[in-house]
Each structure stands twice: as C-alpha cells, then as structure tokens.
Length: 313
Image (cartoon, rainbow, N blue to C red):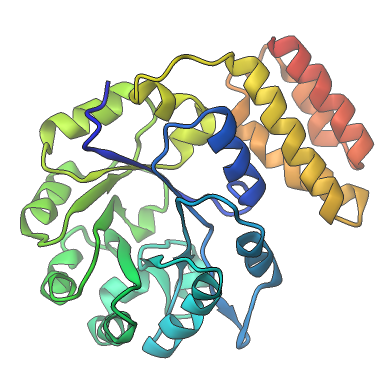
C-alpha cells in the first residue's frame, strides 16, 4: 500500500479524461488526489469551446486545469476560466510532445528556448498570490540533459511542485524512461517533485517511490485509464466490482456524449478510443472489438459495446 503522504495525480489524456470521465471515475473507483483537465490553449486568439465546456461543467473539488501557454500574456488569459470558476490551482504544461503544439512554440519546445520559457514563468510570477501553480515538463526536447539549462530559472519561481515525465519530447510516449537523468533532475530541483512515466502497475509505483523516497507523489495517465482501480488499490481501499463499475462508467460517459453531441456518428467516434485501454485481451474479444470499430452510429456503438461488456463479465 502506498504511504498516504504520497499524492496520486491523474494525468490528462486528450479526448478521454474529460469532465464526464473524471466525475465517474472519482465516484466509482476513487483513490486519486488530483485530476487534471486536458490542457487549455489559445487557437487563433480564442479558447476552444470544448475546453470551456469541460471546465464549466466541472464539479469535482480536486480538479486542476492544465494550461499550454507560449507567453506571459497567455498565462494570464488561460487562467481566466479557472479563476471565474473559483479554482485557484493551475498546472502549466511545458512538456507536451505533440508536433502541432511544438510547432507553435508551446509545450516541450519551451525547454529548448530559455528566453521564451522565462517569459512564461514571468507570467506565473505576475499572477495573484492566491493562485497556486505547478509545472509539468520533460527532461528535454531532444536531449535528456536540456532540463539543466532551465532548472535555475524554474527553481526561482513559486511552484507547488514540478512534475517530470522522464522522457524527451522526441520520444513522445515510446521508448524507455531515463531514470538516471531523472535522478539528476530530482537532486537539483528545489521544488517538490512528482514522477511521471510508465507507471502501469502497483509494482511500478512502489519501485519509483522506493528509489526516490522524497517524491511528493506520482502522476499516472495511461496506467490508470487501462487499470481503473489502480489508485484505489494503491490506497488500500476496499475492492470494487471492476466489471460492474466499468459498465457503469462506460454507460454514463455514453449518456453524457449523447446529450451533448448532435450527430450519432460523433458518439461512436468519441467512445471508440476508450477501448484501446478498457479491453486488454484483444484476441479473445476480437469479434466484439471489430463490431465497435465498424460502428458508425450511436445505436450501433451501444449495441456493440454492450455485447463486449457482457462478455467481459
């Protein structure tokens, strides 16, 4: 069981861990200390409507909006929806590895651009003292040593913690995490550190905590989406009927999608990516997964998913 002093943070996965998912996961599975929203960003000078809707519908007290700024002015603007909602904790993402994001000078490119990162961090410092910030980053853009070029700058900013994903941006989510480079960062970071990267099972979490006992906690993304009870087990909470809880979570997400999406195909396309995580035995359920993949209306998707969920128990 994980010592209660270590926090468990649920990393955002774009298109998957939206407000509906977060609400149902907290209700049915629990064990998570903080849920992060998929990041807010500015597109053509405006917020994306789905980002605003996602936060406007939020009811959890432990949600942390994640923002993707490219300047001090964007830090201020991107915080506005959270502040209007009464939220006073914001996570600044300078680790996003997706090429379209980096092409616009945001995300992990900031680690390789100290002047631009300095501008973003000045935006953090300029915010009111009652707004608490954290930082999400990677070891570097194309080298595991690039964090060293900006660590003094980061150490000088008021931050609740720094979450380090122990990869470089060019790896995206492939390859292996560099634990030696992470150890160097861990030793030099003046802020509390959250570890992120390849935490897929209880043993992975306990191994990282054992090696780095002064961590503030861990951030888990894909591991928690694939194993919805992972945080619950780490906390030593009473087990839940995972199959029944998965069915309820799934059906609630579908119902929410049907309520807000006008085109039947949208519901099916929204739900299909979840099965990359929800179903682990792709050979046994090959026929049902094929039916889900082929579904092109909400009704066809619901029928196909019900057949798979029924077989899963």
